[in-house]
Image (cartoon, rainbow, N blue to C red; front, side, top):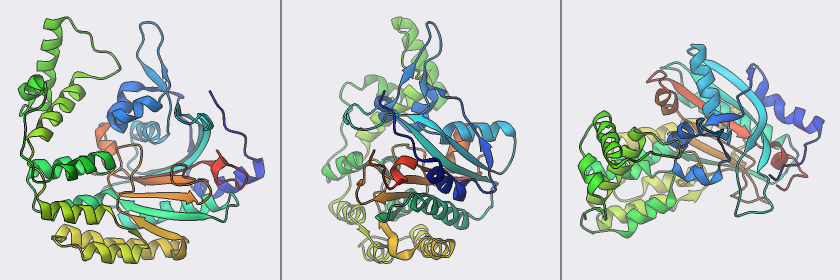
Length: 378
């Protein structure tokens, strides 16, 4: 496993300072449940994980990130709100890049608030702290890229789509290849799922009913599932597959509007103006989301993130699929878009998926110290 070089202690202290102030310091187990992480982060993460399993034991993996384990720790504490600073090693396989570190240090901050807490202020605070931490490493080529899964959802809601198609697009919000696939089937008809008899059988049933039925099929066939995936999750993936094939396609006008939205990458002010100018961009939800972004930008500037360093991209997402609101990355021009110095965003839905409060608030950020360090190139 390729390990990242150490960052000088004084540089690490500078990077740590903005994030750790006023936060409880926490750690998380290095071994994490594989099935849970795949369910929350998405199947695409499997290739990036180091899987560990003792004979006859549950499949686990080396932690690829801290957000999920810190969220679990917060929920187990019973607190309604909290701020947690973490610092430690994370592990992600990089088979396609022999020069990339697979064992590296992350520092970060996760903020949890009760329902009703101001979202925009929290978003601005966390993004600004990530920026301050990143620039403390010494680089002078950093930019703060902004996105919003919620803004995409509001735009989709304004296109008057069939509910099944709208839901499919929202699930693909941070997955460009799936969005392009939808654009490629413009004007097409719904079609049956290839080899999808089981998916058709499960479609329309409740999650519990689908899981029970799938377990019965496994029992009759003598199949023992592997890979840490439970019957409920596998059933839901099969159902989504069937629903995707049956969903109507985008019209030509809808596809053109969506393509214009996805192509926007500019300064925040120009990006918001470009969204408003898209034919078909309508609806109260979109108007509210755009107005909130103007407020968020003002709060970001007030919190210390320079307007001159901000850019906005409507397709900005993360490797983890649990983000559902603001997304952001601090990028180095020298390192490029695929090696961000810091990432973060809002994930209000994650605590509920871990059996926490349904209406809680959660936002956080992570910084890679070696990438932030002016000498770091990994």
